[in-house]
Image (cartoon, rainbow, N blue to C red; front, side, top):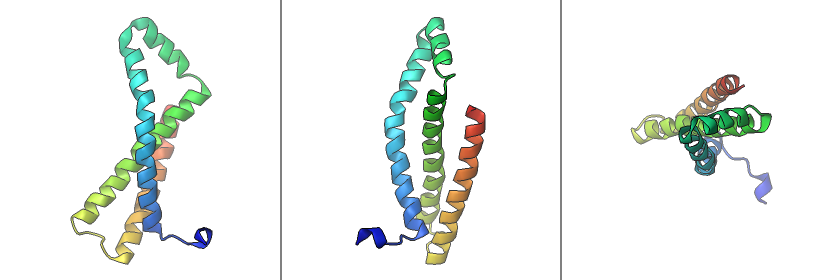
Length: 115
């Protein structure tokens, strides 16, 4: 029964890394659309500013930033492991915990910046 499996923390961090990569892929459509609007004309830039003033666009922007932040921090984890660091089970747990803690702090700071 798959619902009774307890995944270790490094596995959860790795799965979240993949999910954040998928979120970035779909979030890039909004980022590219916003970049296009901001560069089209002064009127479209002002329209974009007005659009991004709402609650839902801010949540979408925060979610995209959260995906970027987590993916970056977890990518650093993978780079460290590729260089031979934190390859033991205990080291992987410590590094996965650090990734989650640092990501939560940076995502919270991004939320403060967006709001």
